[in-house]
Image (cartoon, rainbow, N blue to C red):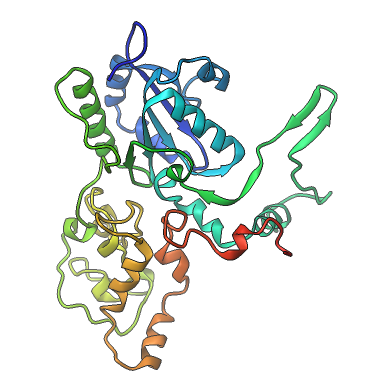
Length: 335
């Protein structure tokens, strides 16, 4: 595991369709970032340095030792850079929930492209007096200009290119990033081994519930409520108190930060080990704790979940078995 030619191994990080929190999480490793600089030649990291796609294109294939790719694939530019960095990288890591699962941007897969664009360009917070819409090409005095093509469905990184490792989290916790950096550096110096290809790194192998210090008893729910509407017992499992907590289906590794702070787990570390579909596992967990056999009462209890799709697939829709609604596959909302 080394860079091509002389010098240090090469490192790259890319920001596709995401919020940028993963970039901040890397910087939040504090002095550990100096270890990256000491052991790698950073050749592509647009948020932190002046870098151009043409510089990457000029590199030999496989020249980059390690690439952390954060963000999902929403448009043609995202897809092109994903393919480019796949060719140039020995190891490509889907870094963060957007790359691994689609994350919050993936919820747009419930709507058509037309609906999304109309919302963005006609919303009450949008100043668009000429009622303009994006054009993918434009003839300007300098020549024809192009913007990336907006895809009808957002995809995860591994739905576009082969991925070597997955590092979940929205964003990944800094201590987990530090641990992965340490491992990679050990491997570079012949003092460690990488996990099998396709492995999840920087996370646990259990669920958030196993990390949570709250007391768990037999759960019997008669009503779902928002946490701000109750005086939650700080020592008791939130799900037992009627607060929908995603801990039973979510991979461990975050040290249960949200439940520890009095907030429900929202699932940002993705499916727990062995979970095929995150939403289905969470729905099963919720169904098992409802304290009723009466269909009408059960329906009434479930009505306490105001946004089932947003709750059960908040981070995972694009990477789930569902992936999207039928409307998202339509190129025109009227078709």
